[in-house]
Image (tube, rainbow, N blue to C red; front, top):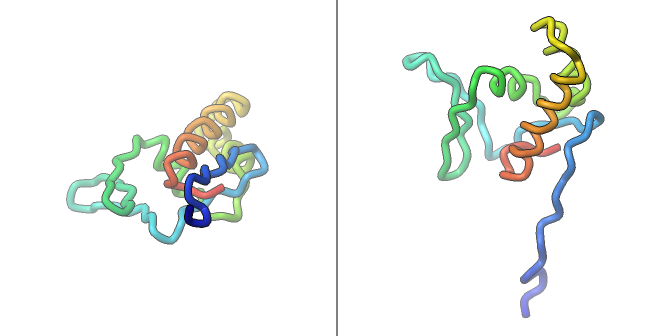
Length: 102
């Protein structure tokens, strides 16, 4: 058996202290002609909704999930805990798909 064969990928849990970022092979691009944002991944293209775009724009590998949520809560005058919960949920789903690293 090869080394690493059958090994399972460890799930990275997104928490408020996580500092999510896009891996080098994933790009967030704006299509000015269509007025849409796209997440470009190898052999995949995602069209995130407007809220996901606002979160992904802030995923710089330096800013924590808690700070992203606080910024969004302030910008949209929304309850911090609700924004934090929704942000973690979305980022966890994207992390599980390999779209972001946390």
